[in-house]
Amino acid sequence: MIVLENISKEFNSKNGKVKAVNNVNIHVKKGEIHGVIGYSGAGKSTLIRCVNLLERPTEGKVYINGVETTSLPLPKLREARNKIGMIFQGFNLLKTATVYDNIAIPLKLLGYNKAEVQNRAEKYLEIVGLSDKQKSYPNQLSGGQKQRVAIARALAQEPEILLSDEATSALDPETTDSILDLLLKINKDLGITILLITHEMNVIQKICDHVYVMENGHVVEQNNAIQLFTKPTHPTTKKFLSTISQRNLSPTLISQLHVTGAVTRLTFVGESTGQPLLAEVSQRFNVKPNILTANIIELKNGIVGNIVIHLIGEKDQVNAALQFLEESGVGVENLEGQS
Amino acid sequence: MSRLDTFINQWLPIIGKSVIETFQMVGISLFFSVLIGIPLGILIVLTRPGQALANKFLYQTSNLLINILRSIPFIILLFFILPFTKIIVGTTIGVKGVIVPLVIYTAPYIARLMESALLEVENGVIEAYTAMGIKTRSIIWHVLLREARPSIILGLTISTVSLIGATAMAGMVGAGGLGDLAYRFGHLRYEVDVMYATVFILIILVQSIQSIGNRLAAKLKKD
Image (cartoon, rainbow over all chains, first blue to last red; front, side, top):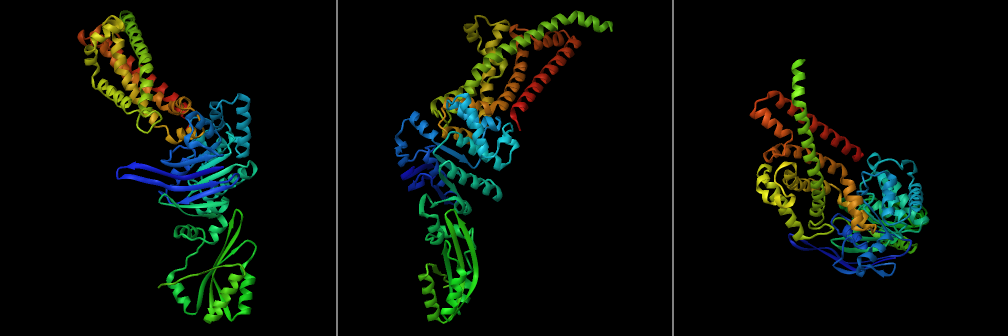
């Protein structure tokens, strides 16, 4: 659906050329939700703007539905853009127009007849739950409601793709959740493919099938969401993961605990739960597992459990226990203390 | 009471004529100034670097032209462009003769006010419409100008008021008007009553224009 091939984007700044996006490849299949996460300045905003060519990549090609849009003449590009909706952090609504007109005006400008405009405006306001606000002006709405209007505006073009540029970053956590639910709903019910960028891990956690971690213009790690949450490899990914679960114990504490046994993070995917396994471990081997931290992360396509245990016992018994756990399909990661 | 009666009998026709002349000068020159100023304002916004129709040459030329015209005080402009006025309208005196300098004085002013009004419109909204695949022409009309309407109205209000001020000097070329009346009768002939009456009418005039402008802008703003 969306293919970005070796995309690079250079900007001229006072200090010479800056490569905001560096050789990035992205492939979003129809009906999936992909997320790009990174800190500000990582180049993710530039990247998503390359998809509908609001920003022209200096190198690389963009394919939408198999058509290379990077080489299209302007009128054809406009047609291609009709199939791509976009929502923004700042909502970008017309302040001087009612909610209804905010959806109707673009449709009129795109040449739809009066009946169709009214039909679509009412239909999509209904979908985003704002039918009763048709006559309000954006300034009379809350941030979440404004974003719903923006989503309705994007949907009214009946796009195949929705791009979300930090759409929830200006919203409070509760409103963020409701907007994410709405995105999930339109993905499921209308089959719209979504590419989003964010700096919030909970956005990725809640709705993404596939994740790209971006830093300094590069994609430093990418994987499907479950794999990324269970087996992160890049330090930046781990840092992002630590924002939603208390993954980090202090190195001093870990060093102290290492004296009497191993400190290990166990990761469970899906239905397997930790408790019975730990009980079994303590029966089979001469070890006592002590749970230090534990949490469960609900992803779009599954559940990931994290337990950090202190496994107290003799070294050979501990190692045997860890091997048993690994063989039972549990992710085992030894935590190092101070060196 | 009889003094007021005599004043009205004596001066009302003259004052009335002056008011009409002022309205004529303001009305006609505002019409042409808007016709030139608004497109010029749009031009310097759209041709600025990074905008939809970025064009360095056009931008800098129109910018320079506006600055030059805005540097000349109206009283000097009035005489400076006499030959040009003669070519355009065939005369340099009367209401007709003063329209050309008034337009040349006001149009660049309106262009600058339009520029700042249009620059207030968030770039994000324009970007959102570009992303939807909407033509630049439609974006100018339905996004840029629409969103800037409240500021445009306020800008036009300011230009109208300053235009009224400029017409006061039009008496220099025999175009009449309220300013001319206050100068000739109020000052030169020391008819204090006429001076007061003129000032009073001007205050009412400017007040009403500003109030109408403010109310219209507030109504369009929807805040």
